[in-house]
Amino acid sequence: MFDTMTVTKVTGAVCGSLLVYLFASWASDALYATTPAAHGDEEVAQAYVIETGAEEATTEAAEEGPAFADLYAAADAAAGEKVFGKCKACHKLDGSDGTGPHLNGIVGKAKAASAGFGYSEALLAMASDVWSPENLDAFLQNPKGYAPGTKMSFAGLPKADERANLIKYLEANP
Image (cartoon, rainbow, N blue to C red):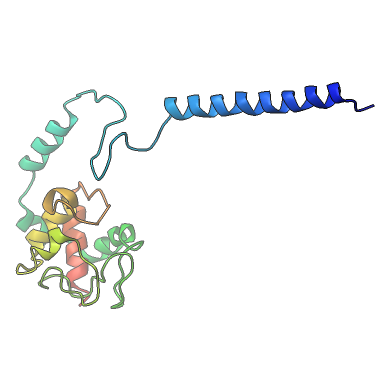
């Protein structure tokens, strides 16, 4: 039943199938690669960008809105507690650090001041400054823009009233 020719044909079929699978895998990796096409920390875009002008419109609308001081004066800590739900994955209010540092008493606290937490170089360079409501507002709007190189991967809160409510909530939780 199994002679030398049959074994040779089966072995050749298995090797040929593996070779076809290997080439298909290489081709799909080349077409649908998700890893950066550069070395080191350099980011490389995987696609082209279509300019729609949406960023310009949002920055203009943000500039035309009410001043942060007015929003902060009218902020609601209860509404800020709901916004804090977006922060709970990384930050805690019980005095223990999570992925991010704890936020107890953060309003008015020195930057990079939670003992034992490994801050990024960007925030360590700002350690002489304090987290005023205005500084927190700027950081929460665009963390990577405020502190380039920060470890915080959160994109930010685009709505000024949400930021004001969140800061009021954090201020109420010393």
